[in-house]
Length: 524
Ligand code: KIV
Ligand code: ZN
Image 1 (cartoon, helix red, strand yellow):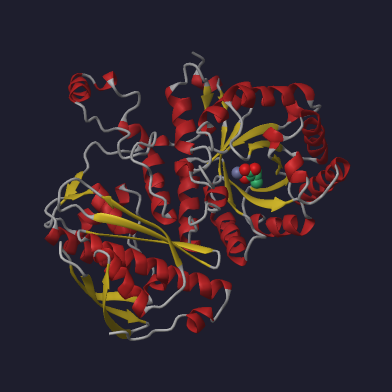
Image 2: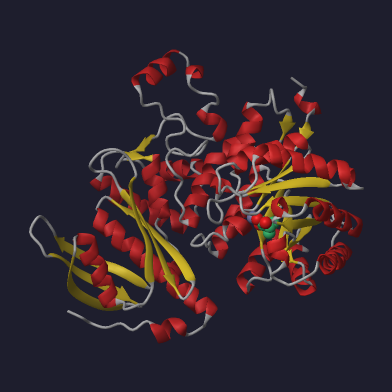
């Protein structure tokens, strides 16, 4: 094994806030983006891709503020191969102590056909745009999108052009998750060997997970000479997602004997940021997800438990505390005070102001009255329930459902909408359907329910249910979440949360539309 001090550094480029946030439904608010960027910076991420500044005013503002608040990380913005995109990107990232412009164009035959450029025309465009970016910023990354399906000779040609035009990092994206480990390694090795100037720049690998090989492909690329891995927390991203940061970082740490590379990541911060990203993106982590899944360190079977008690190494290749997981999950009860709650929440990665703490404490006490033992997962679920004032125009005042073997199931509901009280009684195919029909009757809308998902937070019949609801209206996708020991209440709160977020999105994209389109009618 090599001395770790002498090992090559692999840069970690996190794109949770750009490629991850691009995932339909994973939209984060401005405050949430700033918070996640702060956590990424603190955990030692080398480069944060903070957004796509030309995409919207919101993206521009988020990238600019993340740049301003950045401490150690390089702050990068994405730009298409167009001069106005690059200028806008620079306007946003220039506030960072260490800014980077990342510009890209699709180079495979399928992608070249979209702007209808010949190979020569595209080569000229690459030269001009990278030169322009480099005149603005001395840290420029260039990506040939869909590189793994680009003709090899053409890929070598355009990579050489980008290097000569001043790119300091060349990223090789497997945009559609098509490559396999051997091929991923061979591609990087080939570029290093064939392209003049390749030894002067950093090669990055950017893998999507459509065939479940993103982590393996990224590590293979590193073994062949790539020195930057592009990834997201929890593997968030379009379709099957991107390479998961926690997987590549822990693989390099645990198997340092065969992959002798160092990262600057403080791995004990992994669990906290994973939970925060799951919460704010509305994409829960699957239970058996490597490193951060609820079951990743749980040993259920008798043989495993017996072995673990005798020697943890029998079944554990890394310690829970290496990724920031506390040894016990049982935390508090109804007698726990405010200071204990604050300290536990801080441990879980939630920094609260005094007013926020006051609000959470009230909800914590309410939960503790209904549930004897409060676990970490209960607190996380509690924090998932939004307290953002923007999310509260529609509020649930009361709900009473009648359900059982004899239908129809009915829901009596009172909501307040901008302070005005509305009530109705509706029936449905089951209590949740009846309750959702009541919401629809009180807040008529055309939004389509895309996803309704329920999970028990802990074991036991008094467990809280966390509910995620995803809705779509005119291409705008929002998610709502809530938790309660009553599944129907949690469902309605999640539904209302999504509707409130839809109002905010409408207001942002078309000011005044929220008032125009939402009509409140009394149905009872
Ligand atoms: O997957 C991809 O090709 C990308 C590029 C914009 C780098 O995300
Ligand atoms: Zn991507």
